[in-house]
Length: 201
Length: 201
DNA sequence: CATTGATGCTATCCATACGCCAACAAGATA
DNA sequence: TATCTTGTTGGCGTATGGATAGCATCAATG
View 1 (tube, rainbow over the protein chains, first blue to last red):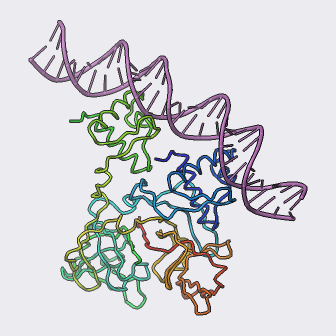
View 2 (cartoon, rainbow over the protein chains, first blue to last red; view 1 turned 135 degrees about the horizontal axis):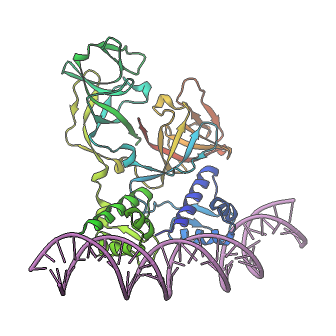
View 3 (cartoon, rainbow over the protein chains, first blue to last red; view 1 turned 120 degrees about the horizontal axis):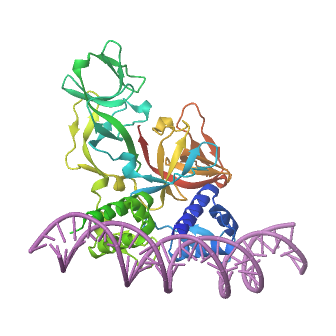
């Protein structure tokens, strides 16, 4: 089990390698941790190597590598949030926020998942085969992406707009498909999309 | 049978570990329970350990762990998978597969999350502000979406194509942006995108 | 009324975690 | 080669936190 500072050290090293392509030097680690002592940094590095999280080539400058195996003790549902990435810029570390908790990201009361078929929402980043997390609800706000049942027969995934005359517009996010307008009593909101996910294999 | 305060303590500890990734310190437990005494907090921790709900590593700072069975309890991370949805059709129930396990969907060894800035991959359904799950790896296959470091300076998110002459093409998924071709030694693969997620607020 | 259990406080002991520095050895570099 | 940088090790000190004990209060109970 790692101490707090050991965990800090591991995160710093991992982020550093991802950002620079090579390992840090002890002094850079110390600076990253906000301490003055190379010796202390070295001690943390040793602890991480003992724990099997990193590999150290003895004596070698910048001789720190990440191990292939994942640490088992990390909570199984939290992924490290390394930083922002934008085309043409180095990965920018996010200060403060360091983890994505999948539960926090997606879980909530009355939620379920639908698998999306078709490209009708592709311009909103919802592609064929994606999963959408839907919160069951009867009401929705203007601009929400909703699961709507029309005439009690067909269910669709669309962006909802409320018109001044009380009618509703359901708009596919695909410029090939036209929006449709319905009187409110033909449309039943079944839920609102609160999340979306995709897995590449 | 746990007393009221013991239950409070257990809830606090479990939430703390899920939130922070490591156990609380006695003083934090005391504060969480609204009491002033580390000693009292310690007594509750002992009771929970005796009851088998937590494990305590003696003497170790923050040495509280959840028991195996508690950690295995995934129910908090499983969403019901209701079915497929396609425009113009009723929701079609999926036979067999009935749940989405977030861990199974996203977790794996050596993975981390990056927050995407910009629209360079929007036609692949990766929008500004999305999170991508990246598996840290040095090699990638043709057509993979990768995090690539160019000239050890700039990191980008692009689709990777390998050319016959050994060079690599990095292609933005945005018809406004051109693909670029690099000699292999200028490009360092830092990871491959294995998942993507988005949260609507 | 005495007993018991749950709850809470304070004080104390000592191992752990954390940090600094100095010295030396082993790369790296000019 | 000479010099600088970096890795490695050991010693030292301080602050924090875990473990334990003793005492007090209160409510429930027979």
